[in-house]
Length: 257
Image (tube, rainbow, N blue to C red):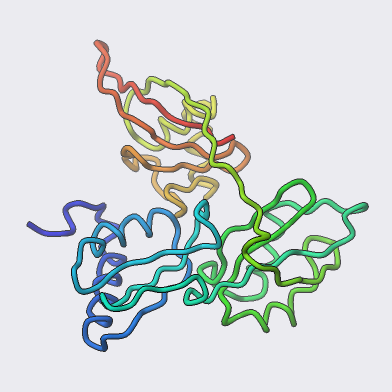
């Protein structure tokens, strides 16, 4: 039985990468630290390596509620501590009385530095407190080059993980009935847009599935998939309950609060 049949065809390259990491740990008998992985990637990594007796997988992203995490693939003798993940937590210092900073501005400013998204963990905002996590190896580059977010001049202050913002993962349950499990059908139903407008949103690269840009309206969704539509929030397919008498799909979804 092929390991690939348990995953989507477009995930084959990722699975090959993970299997290569496992071989690297086995061959050199030393830990392998990854960049930040999104939740889907973490899930796949645990699925294909998590039961291995010789190579263990540990993940950490600042705290247990972290969405994006770095992974350590280790020989069985090694048990990592938080410091082994080499993650830095920064708080943004800015004139809070005069400026409001949004999530998209933080991420946009970080990306403008020419670094990969995989070098950054979660961006955390609680009222006027703004934090983000980054790979420790880019710490000096960040502090030297990140001077503005949006129109505001900022400085960075490195803080301990004990001061991290803890965001609760809360979902409002929705029940929808759709003609198919196609992406455009679910986006249309969840956002209350017409099917045509949902397709336009996808074509304009404003929709992601499992943290990756979605390119095809006909993409088939499964249980556990996470959809984000720019301007409409994030949704998760909690359960596919089955077909109705009219051959439509009854789906329980969640909208992130």
